Image (tube, rainbow, N blue to C red; front, side):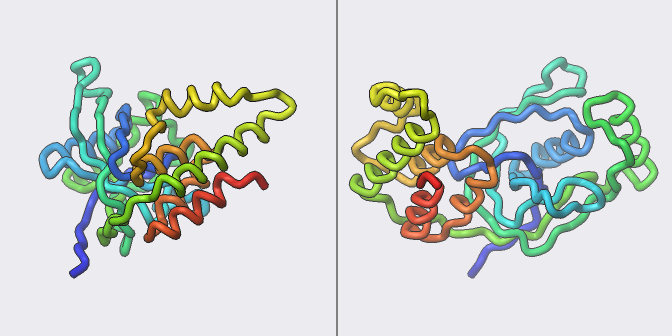
Length: 236
């Protein structure tokens, strides 16, 4: 039976993959409420790439496929509650079945970095009731993980494509092969036993924009993942 649940959603300008670490600085009132609720509950929320074509009550809308983030550490940076630092780790990916809009709309000319902007949000929250949720929530369906690992040959083919792409993009500058090997070592991608985590990490090295990574996250089989990686790493 497919597992469904309702979770907080944090749209971001990035793609979180399973088992990938993600530190975040939290300063907006609505996301501090999200973190507070997570810490009281199971410590989990959904991270989705921002859908630039849509919005939810004026706020950034999420792409429909995202990844569960589990909070592993939460610190009050200045001990005044104004800024939190959290560390998270990616878990299963999920598909949004229904978006639950936040209780307040984004004010005109809202500045998330200003004291005035924070006060405006707090005032709006008091008007609708402080028990109401300022952040987007969604009913989501968990997506089973790909249960196959890639072969060393498949991995080496992806590495070769990545190297070719980096060398081509750098022209007329010459990139020495040993420099690319150093990058792979730096990101712990030199291996004889590749897993899907290595593929996800390599995709991040090969993408120029987070939107290029969304199809990688959405792959449902190993073959589909390899095909999408080849498309990402092929010089166009």
